Length: 157
Image (cartoon, rainbow, N blue to C red; front, side, top):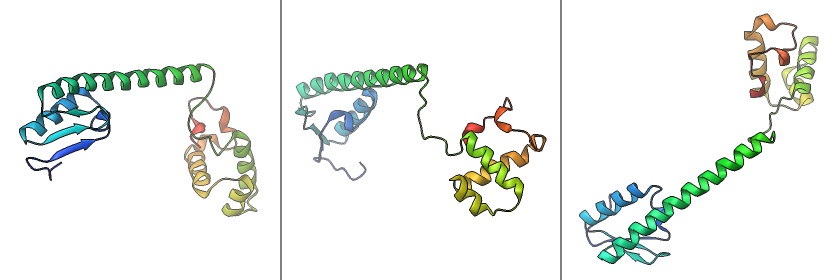
């Protein structure tokens, strides 16, 4: 934007590619007009150098903002519906309760290296150390199945 000179024309495919909010778009177009830079939206066939073009720009910017708001509402409604049905988003946890039990059993034997435990359980070394450091820092959990201790979120592993 700093390289724009008077007389240059900024061409954009869609109006909403230039900015997300109508106020931001209007500020940007006003900045362009102060710097004597033209703006053309190819999809909407808008040319802001004319009064009619500015009117159409304002209308299209308002519709673009409304469209984004509707999409956001639909996505949030879909997420809340999925959550109400018991679905969880995001990446699945690599250390399931069964893997935690296996990891603890192998670790307590003292016969296996970290690499062997990770290969057996099917986790990475970082997940192993995160879990071990958490359990070791919670020394009062020694020998306790930490999956059932309230107040501690072990789903982060």
